[in-house]
Image 1 (spheres, helix red, strand yellow):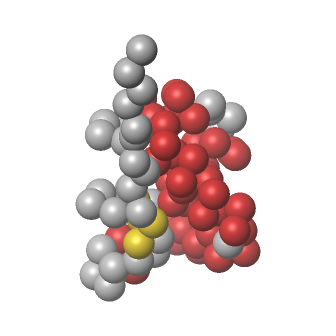
Image 2 (cartoon, one colour):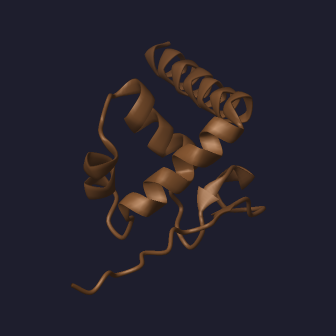
Length: 94
């Protein structure tokens, strides 16, 4: 049996890409997007990989590793995004 090595995408921060927040290299998928699916929506890594075309399970684990190494940073990003969405929704109803 031949084993195939799957290399996970790096986590990078690029000015001008997704507001400079941590993303999977070569994508516009934020670490926080994966964290929300995993932590808040309860999806398994395999399910999350199916939600994002071109993303492997190794990529999901890479993003989760980054999150667990930097929880305050990612939580703050999620809170800021939720605050912006709430403000936008409130403004739309006014």
